[in-house]
Length: 180
Image 1: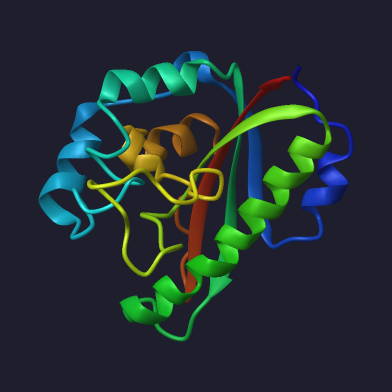
Image 2: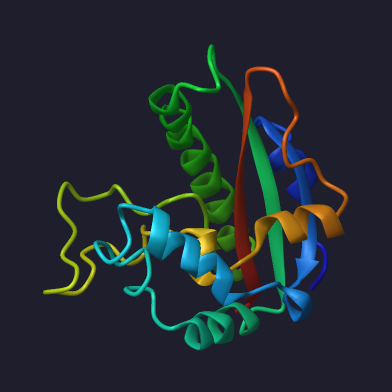
């Protein structure tokens, strides 16, 4: 399935900057992305949405490739100061809400979906990891990078923008899908 009925109209209601339907056959999944997670992210090893909680890289690649296509998209947010990390991160919530609404639309169109987004997951005040299973696996969207996905390579291949300058932030999501 390459077309999702009504997708263009549905997406038009959101501040989606660009989107593409991509094949998962050539989805770049690489260990080097996870190295950055491990070395630079404070959430590494503390949530089911991050490595190693999401599983090993081979398992993540198998999950991604179980879905033949993906809707890869970016949303744009305006901030006063792109150097203000707190302000920038505060715009992520709106992106996650948009991702959830687009995912719901795709599910209503009869697709089985799996969402990768910007989250290291903030649903619970304290994650159950590693002592108990995730409390909300249906709501938790692992981070694209936690699955080893090289976002800049997809952006370049699809001739999309990675940065647009000024006081804007681009957030990316990938909703993998297959017929039910």
